[in-house]
Image (cartoon, rainbow, N blue to C red; front, top):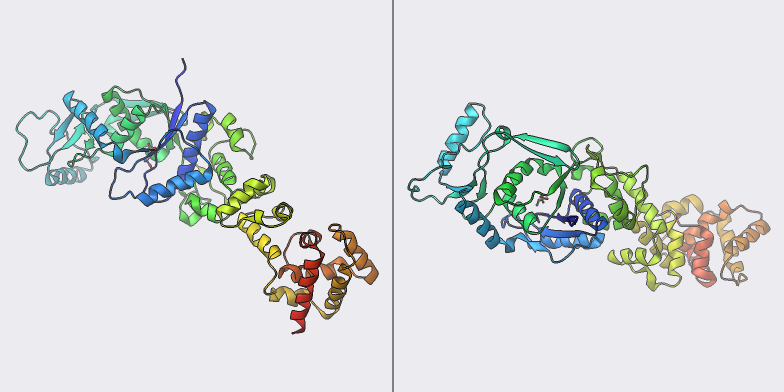
Length: 463
Ligand code: GLU
């Protein structure tokens, strides 16, 4: 029987959900879904000083917004100390780990010596085989008996064969601190093993942890999962992505009016490709995604591309989905008459949901003021006179559509061009000179409302 694919996302709740984190979460999610496996969420909240409940909630909220569903309950490491203790004891009992009574001063002395000799700082193993009476007044740490020479090799699904020379990177590292709390590498291994994780997909900033984790898997007799270390996202200047390059918090994208569909599509392509295709729905990806095709090299963040994808999804997603996302931003378009018609007007050129909201409001709400620059530029005595006439004649247009032919007839009769009248109408109806097709705005508002707005504008001009 083939092994069930189990992946996980294991954030440490120290702040918000970073888009780099969301990308590895997405890769893990897709791989599990593609193989009818499980995708698990584990909150790595053992560092009680740096972790917070708010940060955990922020991560879960961001996950929800993106629509990535995980299987089963969330695992919280902070609830698993007893389990970690049990396994630390097991390693001690099997003589695979040991208590180290080195004092802070001794450790510092060792570090200084190594530094002076230009050696890599590493523990010298002085308590590895210690059998004597423990020194008084020292709460010991627990260290793993790591191999002292040779190589640690593994086959990474992205990087290929990865080799570490034990001498270069390892020592008997700490698995439990003097207060008994387990260290990061230890908890990750215990949990990945007990949760049955078959494939670990994570950022390559964790690559140097992997040999340590492999040693722990071996010591504990657990099966080693397959690793995929994903290269970082860089900014356009080739440096590691930071706030200087753009937003890094997933929820900032929500606030900017980016759709989760666009953000996920954008992130999946940062580091993975399928031919020259650019547009991928989550459903497509669940069929196509393969972590073995993730790029080896770092990918480059490009906000314009995200905007382009966002515009695509704004144009193509069903009304209900767009409205659901608008509601997330506090604006429910569906309460208005002809809401779908209005969305269709706006979505042709909107790059973000904020533009949709702004555009919708400027059409739905009667203008309270008029863009002064636009008025000065586009409105003059001649077209004000025409506008007045246009409003009067609108009463004769009694069908609810085809404002285009009506307007063209009017223009012909008065021997003027559309460009002489379109902007004044637009300003009168919406308060500014940018709006979707004027005929459709007319149709959306209807004759009576249009007349009222034009008359109000004329009154305002006379003041
Ligand atoms: N908790 C770690 C982090 O947030 C991830 C651990 C892992 O993926 O192995 O960076």
